[in-house]
Image (cartoon, rainbow, N blue to C red; front, side):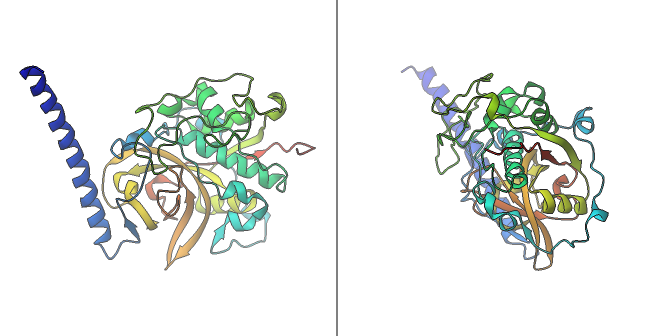
Length: 343
């Protein structure tokens, strides 16, 4: 090996060491700062196992900014507050209200090191709502794979997409079934290797969305006809107030929400999260399952898509009522088209 080659290799190693050291120092600073402040309502940890290498956080942020069609595709829903005399409880968990859909409501997804959170959370929420609307008769995972790969107007697959366009895709084109990686569940299961489940290595550093499979199932063992497997929503809407979000969630099931992620969120371990420090990593989409109050602090109960190795067994709680990290200004839901004969 030549002297010049050795010099180049040494320079590359030095840069890698500096980058690793910078990430470690930042993590240590954030964790110590969060845990050292007695006024914080949450704790941080460096033991989370998130997809990717733990450095390129922005790779997991897949929500594109609203475009000019967002509110046309998902208009703001008018308040239903006067339609029911039932008071909303102080604490609510969709998993407890609809046990017949527990297999879906208890599921924690893994988007892998792909910015498909917009698709994963949308498909998960639609799955939940379809199950709830049919009284548990249609308890099937709907395909985040198909949405991520085939919704061209949504955006760029693993490089980000629009939640509003995702719900419009459900309304106009429908979506087939499809479970988690190697689950063998449904027509088009998720195909990107889940490198967030305690694994340290991703197969691809920057994966692209899989190629769209048009009108065919990628799961060769799935025997149901593609067209018969499609599911649709009748209406799509946005929710913009705390009370409207709670009311809709209580009546119809989980909702999808997008918010800004800051660096400290990546180290969330437990408690009610509120921003403390760090830069914006990007926009992220998740599922809101419920709400509650912890020692006087109101929170939303949310399911993330970074596997159960992150946060509170894949869940997290975030401050409710003050639009923390903008989580209450981009919330979406829809009403499923319920077939006459559920199968």
